[in-house]
Image (tube, rainbow, N blue to C red; front, side, top):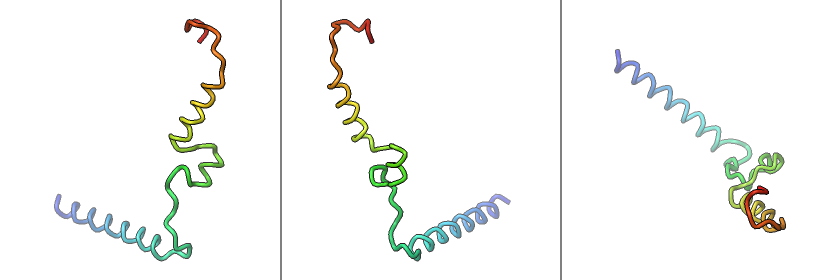
Length: 75
């Protein structure tokens, strides 16, 4: 019983992977979809950037603030 379920699962998984591969390799776009956050147009529209870019923005904003207090009581 276990062996038949295991083989059925392997066969279905294989069919799914082959289907995804065929769709990717034989699509009309002929380009693999962009998955990196920094180069994805949809992510940029939603103002989601890569970690390095977000850290640079945070550092820039932190340096622009003037810190007149010497203690952390104002934080």
